[in-house]
Image (cartoon, rainbow, N blue to C red; front, side):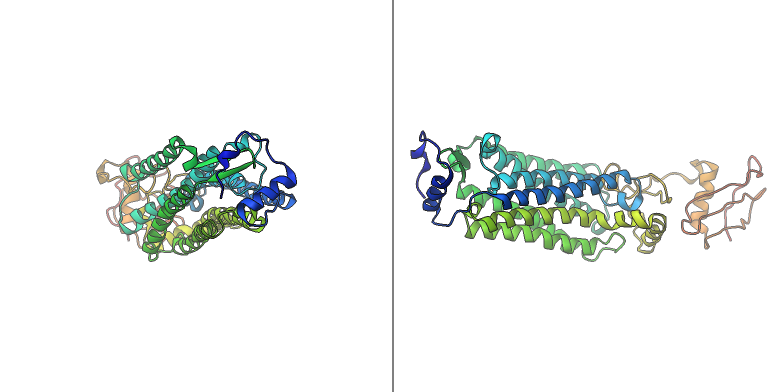
Length: 394
């Protein structure tokens, strides 16, 4: 390939002259940007619009506990990063004419396309790390454990992108007006692809470690499919860039590269949130009850904060905010009398409905929901002001 710097100052080529020059430059048949490229952009836009509507529904039902367990905030960051990734793809993959703002090659390639794809994979890596810490290490995901990985990710990504910003353009990417193209340096190309393998490799390792966790949240199966989709993107990108460095001039390659990125990135988000959202639409109350029952059956309830009340807006099972905290240890006798009943019943109950306290000045009527034995539904108002609360429940 000739040094395009010698052509600086010449009048830009147009139309067939430009296509002929690019064919001589690359030794391939160059396909001009046309209607099928616009159709690809529209298809990606529609896909992300549908995903946006899906995310709006998820946020509208954010207090639905099975949805809240699926790290909605993190998925939202992934959606925004994926959207920016696609916009970067339009420029980097050659689906748009490089005029106006599209000429800023370094901005679109480094700060939009590459950075957003790293953020996307980094968020997924953090999610898997949180699951690893909770289920395999039996440790809470809060405080330093939550902030240090995120801070390290931000520092690494900023350091890489800033270094690319201040390095001379010929070593990263630069725009040549004579042919209206962005030329990406091969060393930068392969360094960026190599760095992309790091978070996805960590995700694969963590997914393998999570293969034996309890099935309440379907993480075992989700992790497998997510890894398949992620490595579809990764292997496809690596192979195309290694074997077809001028793929942006070939219609089938540039369009398939963009479409596969869009479909896989959206499918990962839909996979993470789709099942509880579907249940929320069609079996909202029934599924929530089944979900909490299964949470107890799988024996993972202690990995979450304590409130398991159906219909509650508490975030006992989310990974954002004060997530995955164990209930605070409180002295039994420092609690309110009603809480004392609650704790005593939790300790000694052996049926869904408890009716016979062995010791009581006047028996309070304590009723429990059929599925959630932790929920005090009512107290008989006729009970004495200072009743003697049960020590043993039959």
